[in-house]
Length: 196
Image: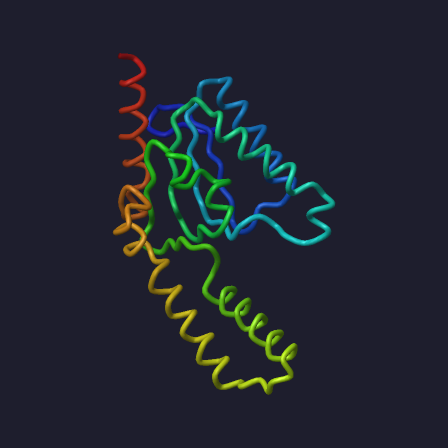
C-alpha cells in the first residue's frame, strides 16, 4: 500500500518469474485493493510464470488462474509501467495491454516479447538438433549458430520499447524519473472522473 501525490494506491511489482506463492499473494492483494477502492499500479519486470514439474505440483496453474481472474474482475483503475522485461504470460499476469489498463507506459529499457531472444534461439536450436537426430542427419553447427544469431537479432530489434510503442502496445515511452508525475496525473484524472 502506498500513496502517490496524495492518492492511495496498491502497488504490485516483481523482478523475474512469478511462482505459485507470488501469484496467490498478488491475487489476494488485488481483491483487497478492489474492496478498498484503491487503484492498482503494476511495475513490470517479468520473465513469465515458473514452469516445470515442481512448480506445476505446487499449483502454479491454479494460482496463476486466480491471479488472472482477480485482475479480470478488478473494478478499480489500473496503471502499468513496463520497467524491464515483459515476457510471455507474465505480461498478462501483470496487467499488460490485453487487460486494458487505464494507462500503460514504458521505460526506454523495457522489452516486450513472447520470450527473450536467447531463450527463443535456444528453443529453436533444440528443435533443429532433435529433428536432425531423428532423421539421422549430421548437425551443421555453423548453420545452427547463424540461425541462433539471426533469431536473437530479430527479437532484440522487435522487442525494444520504441518498436513496441510504435505498434501501440503502450501509451508512450517515458523518462523513468518522470514516473511519479505521470502516475500522479493519471490518478488525479481517474479520481476526477469518478467524482463526476
